[in-house]
Image 1 (tube, rainbow, N blue to C red):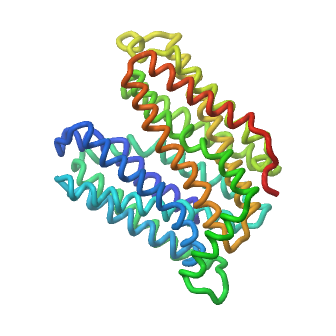
Image 2: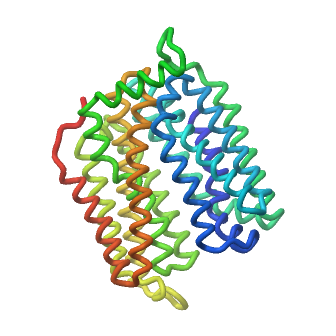
Image 3: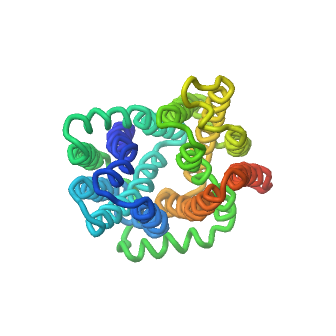
Length: 381
């Protein structure tokens, strides 16, 4: 069921966000700085709310929290399709950010509630659904844009999230702390995580993961690659992520410490592969060496993401008490989100400084990945 939800919401999300910048620039007439402010507000709200919202998932139960998340995002997409001013767009960003903050702990809590024998396969299916949607969503969005413009596209996305909300209601109730009110459960969950030093050390080790996974969405276009080459990069990377999941799920491999370290190293190598590339060289007839380098970077990045994400999830799910899984997932995601937000600002500033700054940004991302991979310490049992 959760895999079906993931496909529905993935199609709704990626079909819109592949084209939202063009809509805000050409359809609404916003300047680049204002577009960055609107999109950045969504991310900041989502990352900031992950800490308390993860614990809120424990209080509400994952199915109810997931329903709330999908309703918030459905409203956000509906507003995004009709807003023509900064106030409406900011409100849409708030709804989308809040919905994202609630959705991810809720969906992953459902998977974490599976038996250990089924959990690896369940999370692999969950990831495959999301990355298949990442491949299909952008071209599906183009079709809807051609048929009815951005309002029709946003309305279809809202409908997809509405369907996901209904599917969450069909899930069985998740374990909750007996006899406790929501505020008390919230406080106890946050307190329990804050006292768990081994887990916090692991969360700090894994904190660069979100920046490394999402950084390519910024650096690949900024390297000057056209939309066609950029689309190729993301489709190849998403396909690799999906393809590696059966291997991760088999025999519980994803929970082994070496898998996370391998994912970090591969992700870092993907950024190093981007350093010598120049998107302008692929204009016109193209350049075979540049195309091969971009393809190699996509494969390395996809392998890194495909190994990191299930590994982090398996450690959190194995270590967290069943009634606190949302709080643990929220804390890990919050730390990763803060690193991603700060890192994105630094990367953007370095790219603005020219070619040397771009090389420094890519090398810095690779160095961060390798540093995290080299940090020694026992993972929580």
